[in-house]
Each structure stands twice: as structure tokens, then as C-alpha cells.
Image 1 (cartoon, helix red, strand yellow):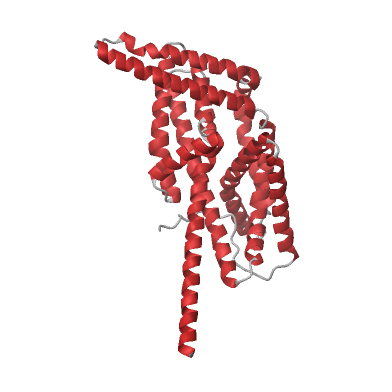
Image 2: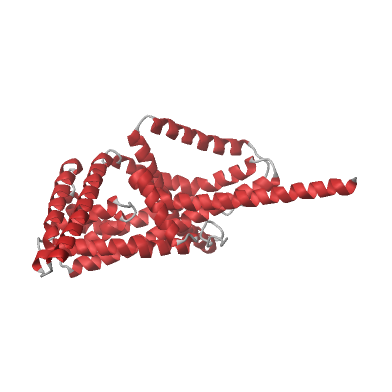
Length: 385
């Protein structure tokens, strides 16, 4: 079994001193947090969606800023005679730097963005209805060409089925977006949770490793958490590369098609790439809403081709390189995730498979070691008699 590529972990701790009050505090706090989350989501579907979305985005943000935090602390220690900022201070400095970079971008496009989405509940259904009518109108694309009667019938039937499928998907996504507006205020907690993850994960890692009883289990727990760490970091890196590719291609493509605000749409497409199904569909709805009637078919063809290449060629290979999962396994996992949990299922499909891979590998290794220990004990007893 190939090993996960080494990436920057959230911690670098290997010592296992005996458990103390700090271990109980860290593990107790984590258990209490998960208990509150479970109780909340058990009675409210909005809480369930909110917790999953906020948790997913918080973990992604934590792994994106972590390499910067580590470089910042290492450079500070080298330049200031061993002094280095705490993880919390380093994260706050990263947030401040990002804010300075985003400020001019927001100054240029912020007004256009806020004017484009003034009321999600009112605007999304209207844009979805317009997009569906544009898709229906595009069914007649073949009429400008000369085909035989049977060929025309086949093309008409195929085009109609594809159109109906797209319209159904868009309608479902529109309803999901309208319902998701209740979760939007929760996104304000993402930076704070990411900060806590970066700052407190080493303490949780140490506490979890110290809490188990035997030296072998301490080492096994430490290695398991390290590899979980690596899987999540590698997955986040692949997602970031995927978003960059989609944003760049969309920005260039929209500019060549002379759509207004092509650069802004490219940035939005890259950001929404982190939200499977709903994100690309929202980009398609937004892009066609500003395209002229003669451009709609071209925009749909461009985005459809990009989607096929991205979902079945580029993204599976990125995940294969990061997590050593076969591209076919990635596609199947995403399909199953969509069937079971919709947008949320797609978000969690690949990291879940990666975590299951790590869990199975450690369980298999632990079982093999325990078997060898039992065989050695039996041999020792047999030799003694």
C-alpha cells in the first residue's frame, strides 16, 4: 500500500508523558463540543447542514493557512533570537494580510457583487427560471443544420433528455440555495473555528495519544492522527489547486467570449468550486444571466465541457496524486456521496474515503501485530514446557 505523500502536519509532537489534568481538560472539551453538536443537529436540519458546511470550510481554511503560519513562526525564530509568535497571533497576522490583499479587490467589485445578490430568496428563483428557459431554447440548436430525418429525430430526443436533466438539476440546486440562506450567517464562525483548529490541534493530539493505556496504543494513536492530518492536508491542497484551475480557465474563457466582468466571474467560479454541484451550477446560472441570447449556447457548451474534463479527468488525477486513490474510486465515491447526501455528500465523499483508507490500514497493521504477539507468546510458553 503506497504511503500518503508527506505534507505539513498540524503538529510535530511525539512525546507521551503520563496523562494529567490537561489531558482530561482537552479531551473533555472536545467531547462536550461534539455532544452539543450532536444534540443540536438531532433536532434541526438547518443545524445539521450548518455544522457540516462550517466544519468543512473551517478545516479547509485551517490547512490553507497552516503552512504560512509555520513559515512565519520559523522565520521569526531565526530573525528574533529564538522568539516566535504564538499560533493564535500568527493566524491573526495572516488574516490581517489577507484582508489587506482583498480590500482593493472588494473596492473594485464589492458593489457589483452586493448589487447582484441583494435578496437570495427573491433573486435565485428568478435566475433559475430564466436559466431553465434558456436551456429549453437551446434545444433547437440543431435546426440550423441539415440532417436526415432519422438523425434529426435522434438528436432532438437526446437534446431534449439532456435539457430536461439540466433543468431538473438546476431546480433542485435553486431550492437548495434558497434553503441554505439560513446557514449563511453561520459562515462568520469559519475564521474563528479555523484559528482554534490551528492553535489547539497539537494539544488535542498530545492528549489523545497520552490517554490510551499501552505504549503501543500510544504510538498507534499518534501515527493514526498524524496520517489523518496528512490526508486532510493533501485533500485541501488538491481542492485549492482544482479551484485555481477552474477559476483561471473560467476567467480566460469568459473574457474570450466577451462576457461582462469576466475576471470577477472567474474568481467567483474558483471560490464556488469548493461547493460541488451547487457551485458550478450557480456559476452557470450567473454567467448565462449576463450573456446575450446568441452567447447562451456557447457559454453552456464551454461550462459543460469544462465540467466533464474537471470532474472526470483533472480532479480525479489531483486526488490520485494527493491521496493515492485511483481516479475511478474518486468518481465512484463522488457518485455515491451525491446519491446518499446530495451536495453535502459530495463534499464529504473523498475525505471520508481517505480517512477510511487510513483507518483500515492501521486496523490491519494493529491486528497483524497482535497476531504476531500471540503467536510469540504461545511459542514461548511451548518452549518453557
